Image (cartoon, rainbow, N blue to C red):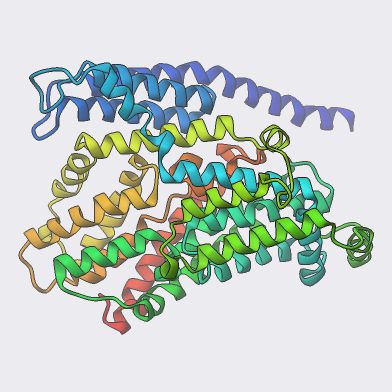
Length: 503
C-alpha cells in the first residue's frame, strides 16, 4: 500500500520538475518572438513603434501563459521594453526623428494613472478594511445561513449575487471589488486554506462571473454603452436599455449556468458541505455577537459606495472618483475604521497594481501606435469574409476576436477599438442583406470572453490578488468556458436571436 501511495507522489514530482525545466525554454521563445516581430522588415500600414509593441505583446502573453518568470518581473520587463524600444523608434511611421525615451517612458507608465488601476487599488484597500473590521465574516456567515452548508450552493450564491449586482452597479470592476471580500470570507468560514481547490475555484467564480454579468444589462458595463453608440453612429440603429436586456440577458444567464456546472463538475472539492452542517454555521454566527462600531461604520461606507456606483447615471460621478471617496472615508479620523499604516500593511497592493498597470500600459501603447487597429484589420480583412454567408462570417469573426482580445488589457479598450473597425469592415462589403447591427452586438458579447488570463481585465486581477488561484487554475475553467460560450453563440444565432430578428 505504501508503494501505491508513493508512486503518484513521484509522478507529481516528475511533472513539477518538467514544468520547472520547461520555463527557460518558454523564456527563450518569448524573447525570440520579441526580437523577431519587433525587428522584422517593415509591414505595410504598420509603424515601427507599432511593430515593436506587437513584439512586446507576444513576449508578455507567452510569459503570462507559461509563467516562465513571475508576473511582477514580466510587468517590469514590459514597462522597460516599452520605454527603450519605443524610445528608439521613429515618433511616426517608419522613418524620421526618434520618439525618445522620456516620451516613451510616459507611455510605458500611462497605465499607472489609468481609471482601471485606480479602481483596482481602491478595491484592494476596501477589501482589506472590511477584513480588518470583521464585517466580512459576518456577511459570509449570513450568506451561508441562507444558502445552507452545501458547497455547490455557495458557488450558485456567488453567481446569483453577481447577476443581481449587474442591475445595481454599472461597473464590472466594482462588482468584482464588492464580491471578492465576500468570497474570501466564505473561505475563512469554511476553515480551509486559500490554496485549497474550493478556495481557488470560488475566487475564479468571482472573476469570471463578474465578466459574464456585464453582458446581460446595458448599464452593467461601459463597453455596452460604447458598442451601442457605435452601432447608432455607423448603422443608424438604436438599442434601448430594454432591447439590450431582451437580447442579452438570456445568453448571460445561460453562460452563468455553464460556468456553475463547469466549476462543480470539473472539480472534486475537499468536502460536499461544512463539517457539522447548519449547526456549525448558526453557532459561528451567534458567536460573532452584536455588530461593533467599526463594522457599522464600514457598512455605511460600503453601502454609500455601492449606492453611488449604482446611481452613477444620475449624479455623474464616475466609479473611480467614488472609489477614492470610499478609501478616504475608511481612513478618515472619527468616521473611519482603520489607520493608513494598518491598511497598507494588510492590502496586497504593490505587485497587483504593478501587474495591472503594465497590462494597461501595453494596451494603451497598442492603441496609440496604431498596432491594435492594424492587427484587427490585417487579421479580419485578410479572411475573405465578403464571400461568406452571414452565419459563417460571424463564426469566423468571433473566433478571430477571441484571439485578438488577448492584445487588450480591458474589455472597454477592446470594444472602443474593435467594434468600429468591425463595422467599417462590414460596411466595406457593400452588402445590405448583412444583419450588421446584430453582428456587432454578438461581436460585443464575444469581447467579454476574456476567461483565460488574469491580466485580461482588472476585475480578474482583483480576484487574482487574493493569492488563491494560479493561471493554470484559471485556464482549466476558462478554456472550456470559452469553447462553451462560442457554442452558445451558435445556438443563440440560429434560434433565439433569429426569432427576435437580431440576425
